[in-house]
Image (tube, rainbow, N blue to C red):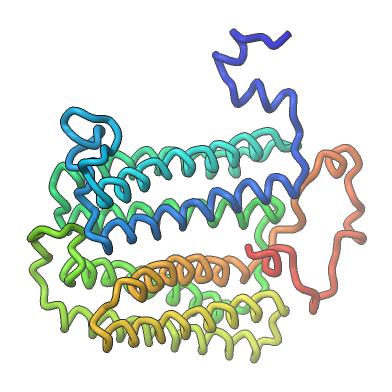
Length: 341
């Protein structure tokens, strides 16, 4: 008979004492949380691009006298309320990741903290989304809403990638010059994303069919800065790949860098096409999805430059594997890079 009092006091610990997930389950759970973090960003973009940002006119209710969308609110109300409902799916995905990470043996406290951080970011972003509605889609709160969602994607990606490697001290797989290039690449990518929110905030897709104020910046000039930063990211990626090739780096970091370059080129192509075709909604949505992929692949590239061994398992703790068995040839793909982080 389940101990209901024990479950009510700490349901996560209750489940953890009775369930030990396989390593693959932990990886799938953390990947699901990451996937839903991207989905909620893209669907939020669909809300804006369809002019449904105020389909639910208030928050936390959908209208002054209804918690849910009503037929009178039409398609815009259904789209906005549907996006709100997806938040619960995201919470379920994050909850599964928290349970899987906490229940795994041996316990990895750092990974558990990262999983829990996703929950608090979801809560914070939900509250900020409510503020955005109450402020009638103020472009600065909309930008902050997206940046906080990007922070969630960051933590979800790191959680997933850390779940696929061990907790040993990081061992560099590339020379310091490549590491500095990767850090610079990451920093410029952050600037690219921030300026991208300014392009959105000053652009024509305000998120509602009514006259919503836009950011007081020159849209054309901001778009050019955004394009220059994109080319800088591409250039730094090429330089990083050349530096890794020159240093005869393992295949993992090289593969991650090539993948990032391909994502960047695809994203750049979409960006230029949408610019010259006057920002059709479908391409803007694809570009938003691409921005999520660019950031995830940038994080993979940055963290592929070191390895931390294989994921710990309960069997490995009970009977440690001899060090000679755990070593891999220097030209093999390391666990910390080939599997993503």
